[in-house]
Image 1 (cartoon, rainbow, N blue to C red):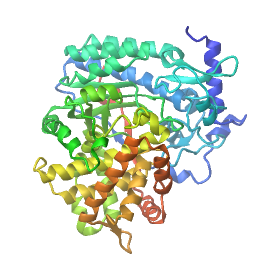
Image 2 (spheres, helix red, strand yellow):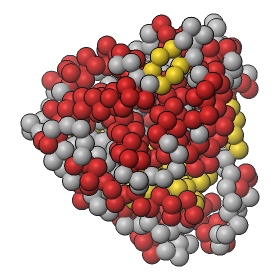
Image 3 (cartoon, rainbow, N blue to C red):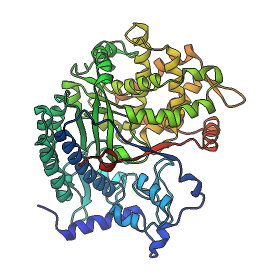
Image 4 (tube, one colour):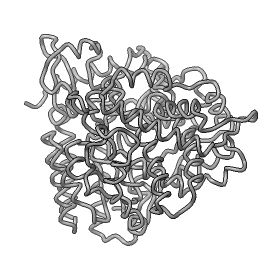
Length: 550
């Protein structure tokens, strides 16, 4: 049954309570927390554009519709992350810089600083965002039994008797879902590629039914179209309480055919790389899907989770473990966004923190490859625990995302090392990839503890430091020790793969508690980057007007 307006209002009221009690003076919500004035410029604006001259008028019309559907995903993620309509919230902020910062963060909490509130009148952000009732405890959830308890596509709420229950996304967000689905179906009518048209139609059906697996399979079969869209509730990072529930997001993409052709060969190495992983056989018994592929895209629109705070520069999907085992995954490298981050952030970081003689090894090729093989590495290892604890994601709960990102980073570097050694990679030398990786740690650590990527990099920085993989001189410059870095990559790979395969929740919690933090050396280095006014990330000027779309 569709929710009544009264029920929807009750949901939004409950969400607002979870946001933190607001003062009665609306203007108070626009006041910055003391000390935040100097933090409003950490994002560098970048125009998100691409060459669309090779596309037909039908394809351009389709892109326009996909952007329209993406905007609805953006509105839905605001409700999931904050609980209040974004237009109403932003309208209450008069300072343009503060308003822009709030828009980037999808609410009053700083995603690059552990989700601390930067506006007065708001409490700490709930770990479960707006996916759970404000008065629900973690223990209360775990002790309750109800339908779709660990579901990806539902909100947890209380029934009339105060008991926990769920309501599906397609029901609570029915108006928005149906509008987005109708737009996808209209976009399908402009598609020349039958597989892409089928995917759009099936994705529309998935939104209405909350059953996304069939559309994930359809997306895996759709690889030749020059246009793509990743849309719907996908990643679970916003649910920091359990990591169960998915946030709405979208990417609208145009394929770079030349770069994609260069990458196509690497997917075939996955089965052998899985066999050669530096861990016992029982932790690599699954066989990666052989239908995986690698492609490069220019992204022309971000929305929802993908646009909140730090911007994604590569995609590895679908997340469905059954689809992964049957078909593998698709790895999409977002080349234009990647280049923007490299120029604006990576090179300046190298100048500030890498010893002069190694700076030449910080290269875009190394950055692109490390990012690409990070996504490839998501397909390696194990998706289901070896001791009947269910999937790795379910067993490790809120720690699953951070550990998976850590696995992908370190196994990606392991893969580069192996492929260089056997001659499959012919560009550059190992030092390029290692030193670029080192500079990349500083870039990603700045995403903060509330980010799975940021937390993963804190763990890796501290682990590598303990293993002597790098050293820091008296002037604060870092140099990589090639042999010790190789040894650290292998040993950390083994540790993470074991934790995942065992579904060792306590072991992961201990690892994150001990190493997922910023110690003195790292704090000093990050302060140096802040003093140099190096952007933490980029933000986009994007949309139909930028692209001259109808």
